[in-house]
Length: 438
Picture (cartoon, rainbow, N blue to C red):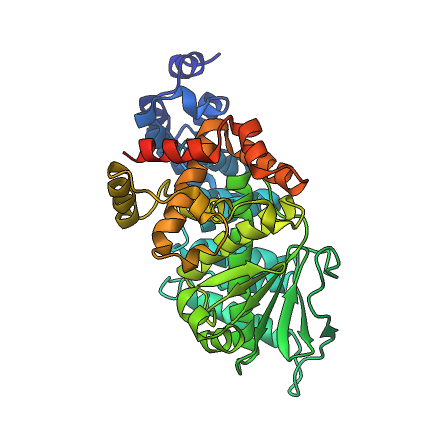
């Protein structure tokens, strides 16, 4: 027969006081039974962290003696409030109870939500090493921040991967990779794990079913290459997952990514481009400037350019089917969202509002053809384009934006698709922009 406290818990909306009472009495089984079927939405918003804390206490208390129950409590704790401690306990107890898929999911969620917490990259690296995936392990270990207490162990494991690779003193045996093919003809690996090679120009090549990236070795030794490639792989995967989460779609066809140092970018694309752009997408490849090291700025640029690659595929590789402001606006909007923002940086937001109040906003038609980087104020042009896309998303949702891109790729004019999908025109959208920004 249920005790009075447990009977109350299962018949009413869960409360933080009830959870705390179970935790104080170390009644872990009763705590789990009381909250196993509870929906976080049914609890008061202020109670959710308290409930999560009580459930986490149970996870930590049982992680050695009863990993299965501990995992159940940790998983429920994360549902109420996904803290770093909760995700870590959930992952470790999932691994101890042989639920490796759940462990990977919790660790990846922790890595995304708490990138400065070294536990998640380290434990993912260990998980992949145990599963015989040294390339994936190196990718995750490279994500451990240099100042994190786990950094020394992550570097030790990267060195271990290098030693166990069996690379001879004369250098690794490699196969020669093909040059990037035309759209639709890219010969690629079909596995999520990365394969290594060297192309005819001496560039290192790493590829899996989603990406093929190139870079010049720059005299890195094997350990340095493993660390760099692991960082790149993590950044590319983050860009793919972020775009899929925010767009609702991802790219099916794999993408080439060419990573240049600043000097290499200047050599290939000219000094003006090297000064002006952080990267660009063209001819079915992302070209990244100043990426000898991968930092937060590079990661944001990768998200932006990967969105262009997704749009290109959605539009049947007919880039001229959409106006430039739509191309750049959607990529910029997703970049904002990936950074946790819904709008432009404050200086551009203020400038747009002032122009709207003066009825002097640039017209979208003026941003339809040439590159926005060539406009008088590129930052303002990108911000305006992204706000226009945001209006469309707010009106009918991201799925209609995706449908519009596909319509245009199949031959429908942009104006026709805009009227059909959103019941507006470019001219009316200009008016709505001015009104919303005022």
